[in-house]
Image 1 (tube, rainbow, N blue to C red):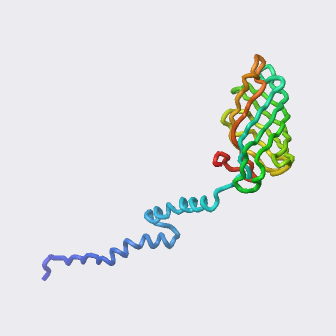
Image 2: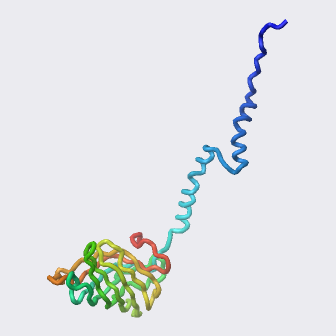
Image 3: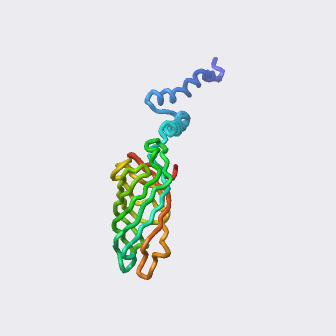
Length: 212
């Protein structure tokens, strides 16, 4: 005789529930994927690798680091009335040191420069220079230089390349502070700048000169 009672299905065992919970993770792993928890875990790996790489490879090191001491003169003065003129003057690299040990004997040189100066009025007044320079290192060795770029406060120095003598082929970068010379400002324009700053000589890839 039926009593009307139904037999309750026994609860699944704990091992069975555990197997069901682990099944999706196993499938994802088999497909080469990962669960969200597994994705979060390796997140620090790229940063750690980058940190190790930075320690192993600090980047390019300059052949020389020098104090910049330069003077450029425009004849006639550059301004609204004269947009292009002759450049003369000097580019001096003083108190040089050699972080990579390539040229510790080179400490000073003054390049006597000639070239062309240009004035641009828009969007803001700009002065630029291009030319070559020749000089003698403290060791008595001849050196030559090419330069091209703007004279702008706090800007990178004009592009410069050593074209002859020790470190020929090196590129030069750095920061400059050009200041118009008060004795060279007249109604016709600006006739000259004094320039100070710091430069680095690089054999190949250039780094940040401000790091040295």
